[in-house]
Every structure is written in structure tokens, then in C-alpha cells.
Image 1 (cartoon, rainbow, N blue to C red):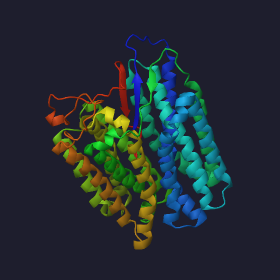
Image 2: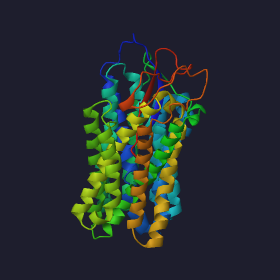
Image 3: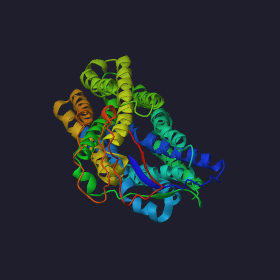
Image 4: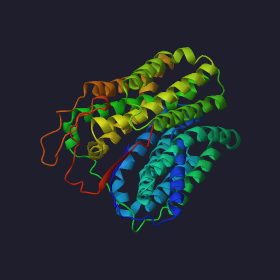
Length: 450
């Protein structure tokens, strides 16, 4: 999740003309490139495993390190963005990620891939991802929701497009040529960043402190952290091992690669459906129970039954993609109601770290299980159970309205908010002394590990 505090001027007149939409397009392509490459890790897992002749455990670290470093860098290097601005951050991120992918041409061992494809590329992606969204926020006083919705659409578009592109590149340019081509594509992040000129009279964006102790005194916030950890853990397993699992049943490489695109299509559709349905569409009792627990049980239980043939594999991807798209929307809406954007903003560092930690541990843990049992089935049971448990945690807080009395007595907290959509009482919303009049808290979901 990306959380910023923006100081808005109600009298500000947008004088940037149509250029602000150029910034939206640029930010769209930043998300498109970063998420498209990052969530194609299952394809690269097959390639690197065959090329370097390592087992699933060793090879899985490539994708896990990439996702971990990307998530962690967006938090650790936020001071760089504060100092030099989002334009320089996006351009530098594009340059670093391009270098990381380009160096992949020269690797001769899997451990060198950890450094180039994992660490260096991850640093570049993390440095470019968050600032590109903040640049859009700077340009818009009105139509901000529409602009950010377009930008977030780049995530789904990237997951749909890049697996197909990478599959054709591997066929015609081999794996080294593919990395070189992706390096050139990543270099376009510099072009996107160059478009994002600072706005002299735009909204001031002030980053919230990400490691405040206040959210840690709220039991609901602890639940959110654990839910993010489990979801990231399970999702990483699916993205890394789904193509390999499908190929175990005779699916060819190109067709298995397309499964990731199917997940992207389904997730994108789910997000659009719930966005169209309204502000709290994911929070009513029936929808939250059926989509969170119902789909979780189905995805966990029927996986081995569907993977046997390609039609079943497509069905599994559609179910998981819809589940993923719903859960992202549900988490965003539920966290706003349960905790409030102020607490999320002040504890975003903890949330991001839990997402990063789940991404780092998911692939290797499943790799050990696959080696021990010599089957993918148990790894996907593990992934499904993690996703289901993540949903159950959030639903427990939703229905029991936990956290009502867990706010500490602090002079900086003037009011308290009793959660939940179905039982909203006329109580209060948390307010912090450092958030002055006219400031706004912006909370946007930027990933579906995404």
C-alpha cells in the first residue's frame, strides 16, 4: 500500500492544462513495466532452473528477492525521493533497473542472477514505483480518483501483457536476448520520469512517518500486518510455481506462460466490478463471506482437481485472479473502516515490511516442500491455506469490531472511530495533531501481491 499525506489548497487552480494527463499516461506505463516484469517471475523460474540446473528451492530465490527488494526499497529509499523529488527518483529507478536486467546477459551462475535480476533490478523498481503515483497526486486537485484509477490499471495491464511478450522473446531471442530487451523496456522508465515535471502551484505532498509506535498499540493494525504477510506469502508461491505446476501435467511452456496473463485479466475484472459497485462494495456481509472465505476454500481445495488439464488450469487462474482482485479491494476498504487512513499512514512501513517478508519467504518455503514431497500439490495447498487464513483474520476483525478500545490515550488523538460498515456508530474518526487543516491522507493500493 502507498500512503502519503497531501496538503491541498482548495483555491488552487489547475494551470497545468492537458500536460497532467501526460503524467497520468507516464505513471500508467511505470506501473505497467514494473508489475509486468515482476509478476512474470514464474516464467523466469522455469528458464533459470533449466539453464543453471538448480532445484526449485535455489531458483525460487530469484523471484522472491526481486519482490522483496522492490517492496522494501520503496520504503527504505523514500528519503531519497523526499530530497530529490519524484522526477529524479523515477528516472534513477529506471536507469538502475535497466542496468540490473542488462547485466543479466553476462551471468554464468544462478547466484549472480540473485544480484542482477533480484537485488539491482528490485532497487530500481522500488525507487520508481511509489514516486510515479505521487507525481499524479501533485498534478490533480479535481478528477484525482479518475487519474489514479487509470494509473492503477497499469498493474493489471502489465500482468496481462508481459507474460505473453516474454514468452515470444524467449522463443526468438533466447534468455540473454530477452533480458537485454527487457533492459531496454525498463529504460523507458527514465522517459516516463522525465515527463513528471514538478508543479510550482500544485498540492504539497508530505510523507507521513512510517514507523510510528501509535499503530502498534492497536490490535486491529497487528491483524492487518499478519493478513498482509500471509497474503503475500501465498500469492508469491502461486506466481512463482503455477507455470511449473502446469508443465508437470504436459502443458507446453508457451501455454503455461499464458496462465499468468489469465490471472491478470481476472484480477483486473474483479477490481473494476467492485469499483463500479461503489465505495464499500466489498464490505457487506454476504459479499465478504462468499468472496473471502468461499473463494478461499474453493481455491485451496480444488487446485489438484483442476490442474490435470488445461481447461481446469484456466479455471483455477480465473478463480484465483478474481479472489486476488476482490481481496485487494476488500483490504483497502476494510482497513479504512477498521483502522482509519491516519493509522495506516503512520504504520505503512510495518505493512510494507510484512508484504516484503512474505514475498521473500513464500518461494523458498514452497521450494523446500516440493523437494521433500516431490510434488507441487502440497505447495499449492500451502499457498491456498495462507490466502484463506489472511481472509479469515480480516473477517474476524470485521465481524467482531475489534480495536474499538485499543487506541491509546494520547493527547495527539482527539477522537476515536468505531469500525465497521455494517455497524457504523456516530463515533469519531482518529485525528492527529500533525495533520493540519487542509491536509489529506491518501491511501492507495499499489500492488496485488498485487
